[in-house]
Image (cartoon, rainbow, N blue to C red; front, top):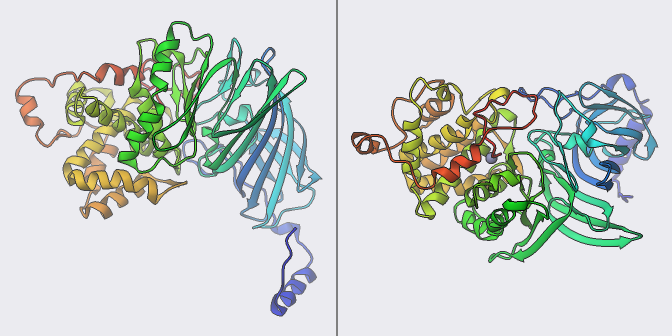
Length: 511
Ligand SMILES: [Zn+2]
């Protein structure tokens, strides 16, 4: 309850408003999509969520999930009804405490009609009670919920939320999260942020996780299983919680030897990108048969298979780089994926340089030379790759080549000022590829339209190499394969998303 002191003028205005009968005619349904060109049905229109409270119970033996989601939102138009994105069975919806009618529609829409229409700009509390077996649900012919021998995991991009909580599933609508999960004793529930508390009673244990900074819905994750959990603190003081499935077999050591370096790597990245933006860190490796990794906020998801070839700190660098480039600053639309993947890949090149296994320039020369002009690699435009090529290798490797070209064009001082300034400029928000070009021009004082057009938007191999002085390397023959290349390329192994989006074999496994 808010007590308000109204000035006389405001009182009069309020009286006038009260005298006008509410007209439902001015209220209209919120759009079933937020307006993303690649994924028209993703997210929803008419409201903005500020907080998700998820109180869940999960049974690993049967994959049964039940829960209550409480969403705090604000309307952005006069609403007669609105949608959430969700797949499980809903038993009740309340809007501002009052039962609302609801109906499933489309591939993943839940249409909610409140008893009384909602005025633009008003605070709304939506409570959704639900249950279901996430692994039994598909949308567009795929699932993002992965069963494991000891439980289940929700992690995928661009969509993972529909299988475990209702929401406005698009990076444009970030919110804070409290995720509270009840699991049988002996199992653990892993999610984002800090573990606020646990409590046990009658054979069940509740885990209470909190993400206190805005988080995109695809960056929210839940894993239930039997994990070895390690804890620590980075040199800069950030608490670290890592979790490893107990049955990773031969991959266990390499997974742990990689991810236990999370704190060190985050501190190293902060030298390039500015202070680590969240209050928690970590990573987790459930026993999935998936092949990819994902930058779930504060606590990336890693597939065991990523460690089949031994440790891969380059992979950890990639996912942690996304905490700045992808999580702190998120895409405005999915076509802006380069502002995530180009930079996370470039961070791997910087790590290679740091480890003495090949400079960024050497890797750029190698990548440029590896793809002849008639390679289909050059037909993918990293600045707008299309939904079918959103995770194409070109978004990563040509994306990073773009940054090397930029670095050579404007010099190290301006380049590294941009890398550090961008996350601060758009912190906790969204940005576009065009925003990056504008920012790079502002910081460097140079016109860069031609450079970005050549490297991000032309479906041909750029005539000039990314290098300033690659001519020497070219004269000497094909550039040598850098020492780090095997580990960097190991993050590109054959894609296996079970996605309906048509990712090709060249798609990258590292999100
Ligand atoms: Zn990535």
